[in-house]
Amino acid sequence: MAARRGRRAAGADTRDALLVAAREVFAESGYGAATVRAIAARADVDPAMVNHWFGGKQYLFAEAVLAMDVTPSDVVGASIEGPLEGLGERLALHFLASWDSAGGESMVALIRSVSTRPEAAQALRELIVHDVITALGERLPGADARLRVTLCGTALIGLALGRYVLALPPLLEHRSEQLAAMIGPTLQRYLTGCLEFTDPPS
Amino acid sequence: MAARRGRRAAGADTRDALLVAAREVFAESGYGAATVRAIAARADVDPAMVNHWFGGKQYLFAEAVLAMDVTPSDVVGASIEGPLEGLGERLALHFLASWDSAGGESMVALIRSVSTRPEAAQALRELIVHDVITALGERLPGADARLRVTLCGTALIGLALGRYVLALPPLLEHRSEQLAAMIGPTLQRYLTGCLEFTDPPS
Image 1 (cartoon, each protein chain N blue to C red):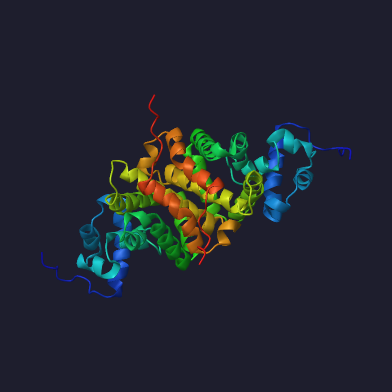
Image 2: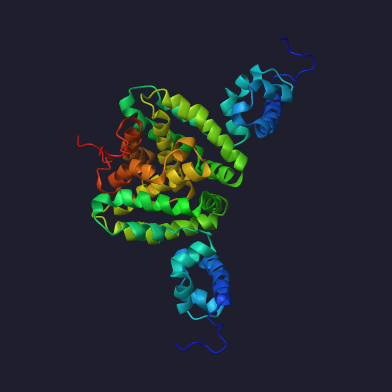
């Protein structure tokens, strides 16, 4: 379909218009049902501008709704290459490096969003389900792949809460690579180890 | 020292007066420096009333400042008896059982408090340092006991955030005993296993 006459030019005001439109459409439809096409139409710009300015729906969402400097997709994308054996530690390393460089305030703001606005919690849940649990789960064998990835997420978000929000001293006294080495085996067990939750055979 | 004349009687208004006084004194002094004596004096009641109505400073703090239905001290107290080998799973079981019965809204409220009010984050940090890291750390050998206990805390708070705040589907599909069995080995490794963060010998 040809671009309509009168559409906004592809300048910085296009970017701002997309952010405003995205907040509206995500709020109305939720993350899963909101489409790039609908957001672009609301902003009166070409849908290609979403990729041009944000790199995709998930990044637009992260910036517009959650004010996130680090997206789960970034961390997963940076970690997923390589053998399955080291995936746990790579996830921990990239997660901590990303959030350390973004600054702890970003994580505080994110946690504040999801604990004060139910629609933000729902939106982040959908983002995680779509972009992390599904993407990473495809790397894992077995019917419990989504559970395994989710458990990894709890380990990472708990570490972030302790380090950036509660600022617990033992977590501030170690470099991110040290912490990644400590929780890496936990992530790896969640990803590929025995979860030990089945009832023992009688 | 004898009770002053004119002190409040030991009724329900004493309890309310202690809550009001506690919020003021904790805000002024922080959790660590605030004393039961100072709070009781502010409320114009006998210091013994703090134990009578709340069971101790930590419970008064949890109710007055954080509106917590479950205190870390409860979970630690219920878990700490027994052999060190099963401590990880006992902690996970008691943590989840307590928060499940309190209802997820309590955890949402707690996370909201610490992410929106820096003084609440500081107060919870002090509560955790005093009543969890120190108390539980005394059970563990080694110089890194506080780090080990803190890592356990991150595993538990991350699970709570995923289950109660983000409501991630794979975490809702399992009973608390199943989840405890899954994360129990993680806690146990943090408590008594190899943390693997020292540089390898060259």
